[in-house]
Image 1 (cartoon, protein in one colour):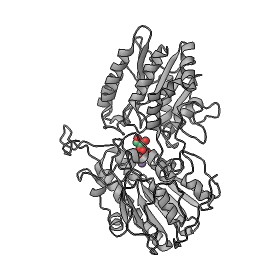
Image 2: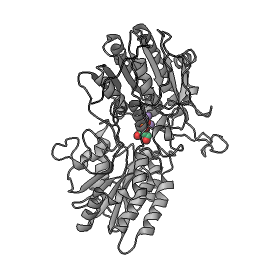
Image 3: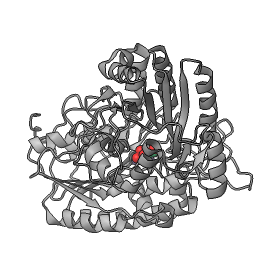
Length: 552
Ligand SMILES: O=C(O)[C@@H](CO)OP(=O)(O)O
Ligand SMILES: [Mn+2]
Ligand SMILES: [Mn+2]
């Protein structure tokens, strides 16, 4: 348990709550063309930014614990940084280190899974996202593990590969699958047989999160484990054919199963096999891990059969519920989060979003911890998300989130309130510019309502984001900055996050002259924790990253 926070006597205090509004995926664009935040009519955001202290914060690369500044930010590392007030080396970096130092392959879990496959003359399966996005996984991690498996004497490897198109180009799958199939063929010899056995789009199968749509996981189970689905002779053939027939971009591609020479599935998961889920990020890895590891208590769908396998995740995906029990790399040891301090100080908190981002303001914000620190002091509200393509409903649930939030603000019960608006990110990932504009306009109207409520309550509103996305909706030439066009002559959509900085605006209608209106420049989003603590009237823990405000 952490110590309680010390009061800061120089801060005058406010009547109302501190409200932290995280506009998921809303950054400051580098290019005018394709910046849907700029392109949208957002009178509230414009006005609030112009007339209040505001600054840009770093939200990518090393500022959020990623290996390099070429790595875009993402929700996990962003919310971890905001909620923990410090920057921890994150999954992408920890896994790479573990491979580089060899620690992964001398560890007990790796050895156990390899020994299991060898002694049963069975397969070692790898399931996960095949790209170099470095948000959930990296293809190089997978390649290193397969090479090592061969060295260690495994004779059969089966890969169940999900198409990305969300952290990398929207139709870039073959840039990963083709060289990867060649890589496997190069490794194959009389004693080693590695092949892709199944696959599908990451938003179609396997990688659901926050219990939003378990039917995705069921379809993944059928595809990877039961070997049920449309059969193809190779992943290349499957991708080309399914793209043509479905018109889907990579993340939405229907599932496929690869057949052997007799027309049977090449690599369903069977008794005695070993299975590694090679994504390092937790949110979209928890459900499939449960399907593999839970016994009769599992009721989410009918698994038909549950093969007896040794299963391991790349990491422990939920440090609270210990999912899964076996994993290859220790997750970052995130401790002493802001929520824990607030609980120790007796401060009531309210956290709200819709399903798609509910875990972001709770589980990620609290350092990948599912449970509350205190039932009494913390209130979590989840507005159910619709299961629809979000380009068709760009407002998502921002109105419903706000309706609930306004009650929390006016109740006077919660000194600290945090919310996540998913619009910029979830609609941003669809690549549909006009829908993103609409989503920003819908969100702006709700921020107008929040501003009014905060003013009435005499509180403080902090507007910020976890990383960019909506601010960068077209692919640009890296050298010239020019928009890249499709064969049809339209701009090529960009579905991934951006490397752009994010806003931080402090709307404090009852400003009492107790801090400098000039905000500190050059900081990252990890500085938001100390800032919130200061605005609640407390001194931030010594080792938290510097606050964005300078107290007088
Ligand atoms: O959808 C997701 O899983 C990621 C992108 O891979 O987005 P975010 O980090 O915003 O959750
Ligand atoms: Mn996000
Ligand atoms: Mn996202």
